[in-house]
Length: 296
Ligand code: GLU
Image 1 (spheres, helix red, strand yellow):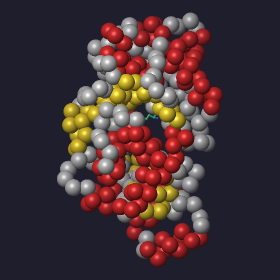
Image 2 (cartoon, helix red, strand yellow):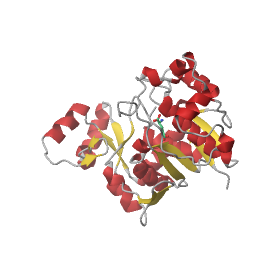
Image 3 (cartoon, helix red, strand yellow):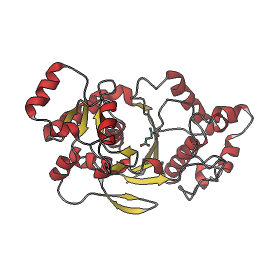
Image 4 (cartoon, helix red, strand yellow):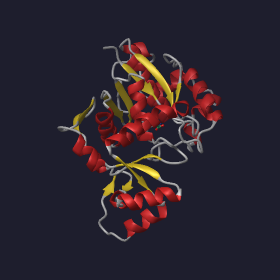
């Protein structure tokens, strides 16, 4: 089966060297094996995404020498796909409306020392999971905002047998979605969360190898559960190390100096970038897709 991989940035800022690294290793991997390289813009958060960043990303990638197969998939054009997945999860009985504000969640966590911690902080304490049907209906009838959360325990009960996923760098992993708790899958202002959209899209686009930063490895526990619930294939994963700045801290969109546009303006060439990242000159020479990144 031909390899299909992708680069999936969010147009919430300009690309930096860390993005170049992620994009190039996915691209090199696809091109070295006669596979397909797809580009997806994860623009579901309409409050933070900008058309100007969308255009700048395409320009930076083209400058780096990347071309992608097929049209760019922009998530904001596919809310119907995510709605269909949510409806399916709802029919399975694994979603519940959550009426908590962020402040209420923080207060509840503060009041319960020893509350379980996830990779990104304390887990949602499950307040709305326990609402009676009557209370839930009454709150919905009031018409206030609510999010939809995944009932991880209920979902687990539905899925037969242990779930695993495989990382090319680190081997097999048991899926432990409990580590992330009852994640939000949709909100009023953003009707599909990262977890939902990325799982649906990787399947719709036929992705066979998900290459992305190690910071997103914990999310794979949830994605694997969603794949099982939605009857979607499970791709292989290659979570690569993150590029660190000279201060030892991971690069962020606000680090202008490592921005590709700034580097380009300063006369850096795409070949310089590849060298700086420790990558082969061209995709044709790429052997090790996940070499450890060099500190720029
Ligand atoms: N959109 C995510 C980001 O910009 C990447 C998502 C993924 O590769 O799964 O960090």
